[in-house]
Image (cartoon, rainbow, N blue to C red):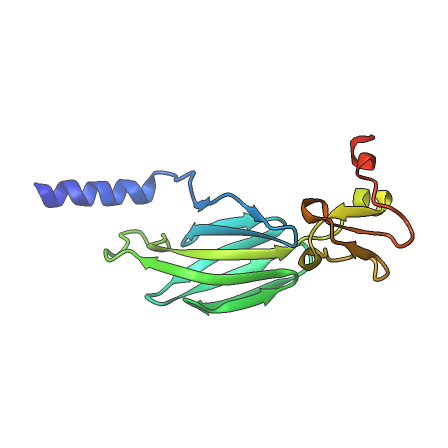
Amino acid sequence: MVVIFFLSLLLLGCVVPDDNNYSGNQTVNNGTFSSQEITIKQSTVGRFGNLSIGVMSVDKDSARLSLWTDSDSKTVNLAVGDVVEFGDYTIKNLDVYVNPFPSPMPGSGTGDVTLQVTQPLHITDKELQCGGYYGFQDQRKVGTPDDWVWIDAGKSSNWHAPNTAFNPSCFSNN
């Protein structure tokens, strides 16, 4: 009786649509990089910015991933602890989980992978227009003009165009 109940749950779990195909912790933004830890089930897709990550298969110590953006695609085998670069993104395999029970339905996922996805932050049009942005010396954004200077002002440290003072009030004007 218990075996029949367990098999029924297993079958229903594979047949019932799962709207939670991946889970993600809050995105961390340290001023230079945006980073998020996400867990994606096998045979589903997770997104980070314009990056899509499909989990094709999961083994005991690695995952086969399909990575794509609007302009590029790549398939990789990524072992736990390994890192792959794809465009502006850095993807690190933090962990894999393989369900010890085989899936009764061909093609249905039996595992998941936890990834750390990181992308450098790019300077925005508004920051370029205003001529600066807040940030420490190690928080220079991608696309910041080469001639911009960094001013050490504690919590108000900033990057800004040369021969000008940083004007944060520019950001409050629409």
